[in-house]
Structures are given as structure tokens and as C-alpha cells.
Figure 1 (cartoon, rainbow, N blue to C red):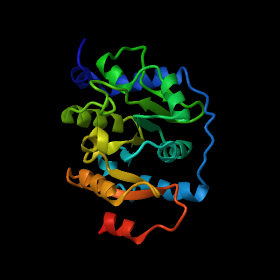
Figure 2: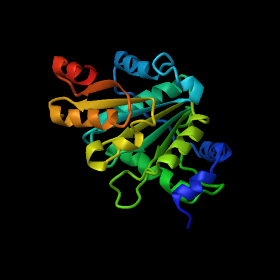
Figure 3: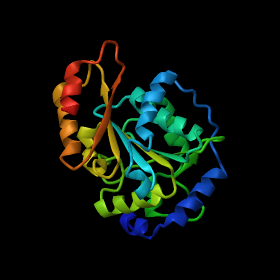
Figure 4: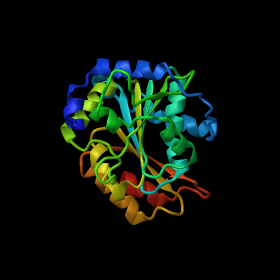
Length: 249
């Protein structure tokens, strides 16, 4: 069996187009009901605009990485709602699920998505696809899968492979949203930090402590990554001033 690195090097844009057509032939019913208020979705969608990502037009589509220090369905739902909303605006969107501990809605998605991205890269064939299409939309879902000891979410860690893979995907999709959880425990920040246009940290209100947030910030910026925003999830009170000061000083 060839490695994911060897196989992915041979996969081209046409292979991904074929995988999309396979997904289109067997779509999944889109029974997703948005949970966030429209005004919150509007503010989250601002991160996908060309004005925020001027370099994306030269390199292909934008890649936005939502990440959290913890596992939280509502955190993953925030990232997914951005992807779903963008797809309703006639963008071809890919949502890459790198969650370690998916719950309910996302666990069902993973179960219905028959082959992971990592497995597809290891064994690409003409009749398989890592993508699941939501019927009536242009939103495609892909689970990262696991390899090795599973600590890094299954996404290929080789830098050249990741660069090559993203380059190809950016010419197939208009927008790519990545979600990762338990980011500090899995060493996943270095994989994406500098390979995406925007990193957005999802902070769990009354749970994420300042030292944890500082470690996430340092983990992204020390590798050349850009933090374009923060989402304060499950907030019951006002946004504290120290949060702005820590992230945007």
C-alpha cells in the first residue's frame, strides 16, 4: 500500500473533480437547521470576505481555520454554520472536520461519510470519494480521519504534502473551512497555522483560561500564522477587555 504522501503527490485537480462528481451522485439530505441568529452569522461571514483575504484571489480560494482548546459541539457548529451559509450564497464550499470528539450531529455525519480524507489519499480510486454533498446546496463535508496514534486528527503532517493538497483544493472550492478541537493536546496548530489565510480561535466563555488562550495564540503566531478573530462561545456576560488586549495588542 502506498503512503498518503506518495499517493497525494499524484492526485491532481481532475481527481478531485471526479471525487466531487461521485459525491454529487449520492447526496445527503440537507436537514440542517441553522441555530445561530442571523446577525451573528452576518458578523462571522465577514471573515470570508475578499476584503479580509486580499491574497486569496491570487492563490485561489480562502482557507479559514476555526480552532478550540476544547471539544464542544456548539464550537464546531459555529464553523459549520459559516460553511453552510456560504454554500447558500452559491459558493462551492468544503468543510474539513478535524474534530477528535464529535458529538450528535457531527458524529452522524462522520458515520455517513464512508471514507476519510486520509484514507482517500492513501488509496484513491475512481469510484470513491472523501466528500459528502448536502443535497440542494454546494456544501461538501470531509472528515479528516485518523492515522498513527490518532492524536493529530489524521490529517497529513508532511509540510510539502499539506501545501500541495491545499493548493489543489483551493482551485476546486471557493471557500474551505477547517475545524479542529483539543488543539493544544493534539499538536494540530502547527499543521495549519501558516497554511491558511485566517485562524479564528473559539473561546469557551467561563471555561477557557487566559494561559490556555495565550498558548493557542503563541502556537499560531510563532509559526507565522495570522489570527483574524476570536469567537466568544456560550457567552452570558459582556466581552472582557482583557480578551481584546491579549489577542490584538
